[in-house]
Each structure stands twice: as C-alpha cells, then as structure tokens.
Length: 107
Length: 120
Image 1 (cartoon, each protein chain N blue to C red):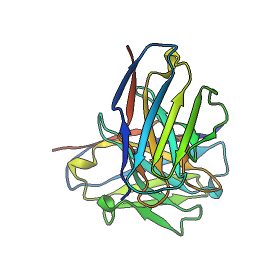
Image 2 (cartoon, rainbow over the protein chains, first blue to last red):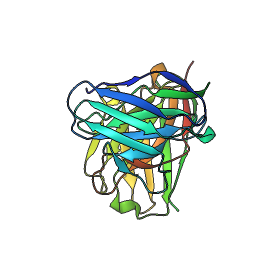
Image 3 (cartoon, chains in turn red, brown):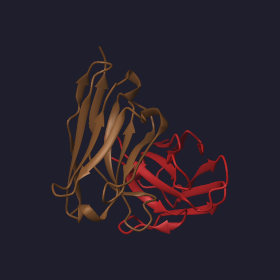
Image 4 (cartoon, chains in turn green, cyan):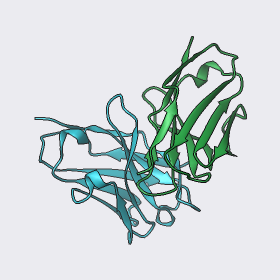
C-alpha cells in the first residue's frame, strides 16, 4: 500500500498568514494526489485534484504543487473559515489511501 | 444539485450484520462509479470499497474483503454496503462518495455520513 505522510500534524497560524502543508508518498505517484478540507463535524470537500488542478467554486487562495513523492498544498493569506483539517489522497494504485491529516488551527 | 444521503447506521454487536444505503439524486447515477469511505472516531479517512457504474466491477480494501459487499440499484439510484461479521474496528462514520466521472480517481461529492458502532 502507498503510505502518505502529512506534515506537520498541527499548524498554528494567525489569519492573514500564508501556509504550506506537506504530503509525502512512500513511492513515486506522478501527480495522482488530491487534497480535501474537512471542517469539524462535516464531510470532506475536494480542494485540488491531480496535484495542482483547481476545482470550480474553491477560492483561488488554495493551490497545489508537486509530483513524484513530494506534494504541497498552499493557502495564501489564511482566512478564519480555513481553520480545519486537510487530507491528501492518492489514486496511483489500489487501495486508495489518505494521509493522516494536517490540522490548521488559530494561533 | 448533487445529493448523497446515507442511512442504515446504528449500534450493532460484534459478529452481526448491518446494511447501509445511500440515496443519490441530482445526477445520472447509472453513469458513475460509487464508493464508500469511512472515518473512525477522531481518526483519518479510509477508503472501503468502490463499484463500477454498472456494478460489474467491485474493489475492496483487504480488511473488509470477504465481509463487506458493495452493490447498487441503478433503477433506484441507490448504493449499498452490506457489512457482515462486524468487528469493533469497523466502528466509524461511513460516507458515500462519488468518484469523478472521467478518471474515478478522486471524490467530488460526499454524503453527510452515517455512524456505525460495533460494540457489545
């Protein structure tokens, strides 16, 4: 199984700061990585597909990059509504796997 | 508007069975593969199973293979998950999720989730 390691586990930031969340795959997966946001007691929401492709309706402050084994989700100027948990997911091979998540919290 | 509404969750004893349903609306259900993803309390997301648009192909994670069965009724626009021989480690919120139409690689819509608790 492909293991996705997200870091850091928790990130404390002040609204207005820009942040980068990391997702590292245990083997090369090209750009088969997707990012989700999950707010407390809600279902996940798709943010980015195939490492860097934007999703309709998602604010432009969210962007993704990377290929191979190292991927990054960037949030430009974090807003109060962005404080939640972020997961990466790989679709390179079955079983589909998710990272353990990065919790973005208010400093 | 795409809607996915799960039902059928609850408290069940270890070794017993439970069947989850997911009623879909707002899109042509028979054109899409569908999946179940679960999340144990305070834990991360875990893919459980996927079924092709016509039900001819199914895929499972190893830990549920032989115990869970994913199926669908396209006439009713409904997805199912039959869970047998339940274990405590199956306790989770179960989400019905729609893979994207073209690649099936990511989930573009999710239901609100249904809780399954396996305990004596």
